[in-house]
Image (cartoon, rainbow, N blue to C red; front, side, top):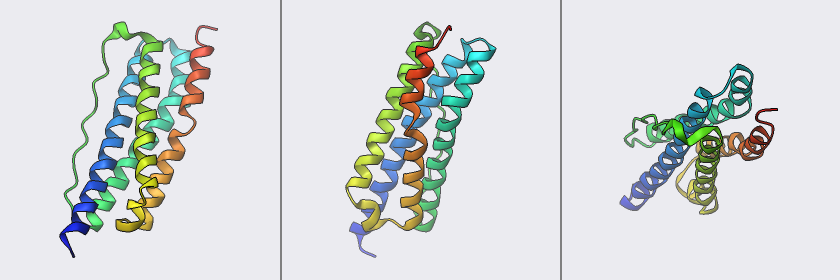
Length: 152
């Protein structure tokens, strides 16, 4: 195998890791919001926002680990992100989560558009990236609706 192919695979893996880090930041922000909510809105946040983001994070990590394993590349440990200061407030945390989700989606979109997953990747990798993006796809709209109806 040429050095260029191995280097390209490592770059692809690093990019997936960057997206997973953004998703971890979104989870941390949603956890910060959750801590400040009462039971009913907290349950709603968990179902509508935290659940899909958590599923996307798990899928991103599995996609990363699977690709690393299949191509004999080093896997990495993903550390949880910091929640942030309570003074950020519920809306601030949700906005931060949405921004992190947007950034993760942009990273993955750019990666898919680059055709690198096709050139150096494999079908499992492409399916994993598509699934992560699908899980993140409705988070922004759901977050807007959640914030709009907060306190009602």
